[in-house]
Length: 176
Image (cartoon, rainbow, N blue to C red; front, side, top):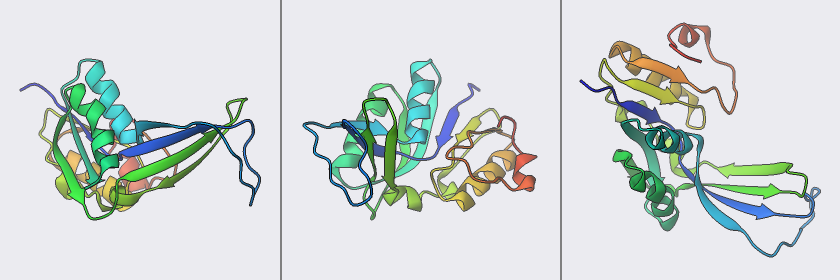
């Protein structure tokens, strides 16, 4: 059986604005343009793994909205299996990213449908790799680790954005 890389995590649409400097609290800064890009740590990992030649299945949640469709387009074009994407009542996650001339940034993420992603969506097999990050509810990340281990799948955690990891889950990871 060919191993599958199951990416369990976040998806978002990023709105990136280039600014001459980052705003101070309460300040509005005007800029001419913005770009909308697919994002979310989970979606980025799924896309990279597929482009590297992996057999990738993405497990995530989006809203029933234009942002969700835009966020899924690149993944579909790259051949990522999207059959475990669930449409939720919350909107698709969105990140607004302001980047100044020196490359410093400020990011605000509205988690939206990512908050409704659950480990119940996971169906790993013994030959699979379950790749996770920490942009979905942490209780579901921990459950995802348990699901992977119960099914003898390899478990990989990208601890970003960083939050403390309970010891009992650290010992179950194959790669941190």
